[in-house]
Image (cartoon, one colour):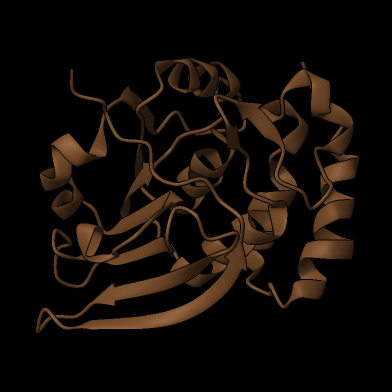
Length: 215
């Protein structure tokens, strides 16, 4: 069934573009994917409003402006493989999938994995997303397999990710204490010399990374 995408296109043209998101590849992908498909039905009328929409389990969709800034900052290339930590409803993973080669989207909450799979079953997507119920903390070694890492929740210490990144890879990380009302989003590049460069991108309120509880 074809979805009317007028509201999404208007959001991109009238709001996202005004925030200095000027990468045409990113703008075109954002206009192609109807955001309403990935928004819980109760909040469908707010799909294109710049707010953190609740999706259950005390988690929220990132604001459209933040998602756009993440995608532009990462400058994803068609031959690059992407790890998304925190699949949510599948929206950001779907956007990344049309910019890159393959996406591995993981979430500790299997309910989000199933929701993302269902939402991403669309003709306009390439079918290049693997959704998996996985705890990142128990599987940190997988980080090294990817050119791009996107963390949709925050961590206290970015070295949790950077210590496991491959050379010449890039990551978007929200950093900040769990109790902090606002977290800072950084683009981090791991250089050939294993050094790091860090660039401030945005600030917003995001949930802290959920980890598996051991009995």
